[in-house]
Length: 282
Image (cartoon, rainbow, N blue to C red; front, side):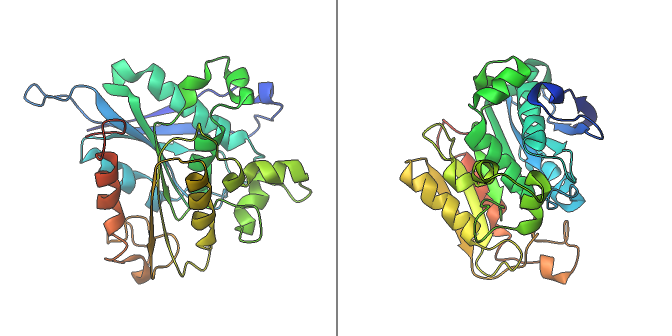
């Protein structure tokens, strides 16, 4: 596995956004090819760490990438712009990364039809935003590329921020809409209201007693996926604090982050990825 960091170019001004203090960086953990291993075009996953749109959590970055790479899935950690960066700043950065990975698939030894996005907490909101908004004209018009370049082939959402409604995580939502938000923008970032038939398959998990991002965020999104007949897997674990990441010593910030029950999510996600040819297969 080789690690490399690149900066992603995003034409913020074309979308009417300021580029001041914006910097999308991508840490790439690409799987190497070997003569005695048959797979030469690897699946890939773009990882969006959480942090309330205030920072990118290190616990939900490299450790996640390394774990996926160990299973033959090239991983890319997006360090997106945070703190009062209005929507769709981070979304455009995620879209730019998706297009970058897809356009460079041959050089990166990646299958361009097996590129997923994964997000944790506020990073889950970012990942889900690309999953529901990838076909919106403002993205293709901003980059001057076909919408298909931005489509995730699936999404893995870990205790995600989803709604801007009653069960919202205030900090995350305020950081991307501001204090004096228009109603239309609040509707746009409430992702359970943005699911369409173009939304890709989703794996989503949460804990029932999450006291930071209420479990209703996941339930609302799962309900919308079901309504639109989007394939999805949803796992609700009975107990667990917010920000569990891999739920073991490799990502624990304190004892509460070690949760063997919830740690099952990673193997469940791998099994989901391998469930049918339409999704990533390592």
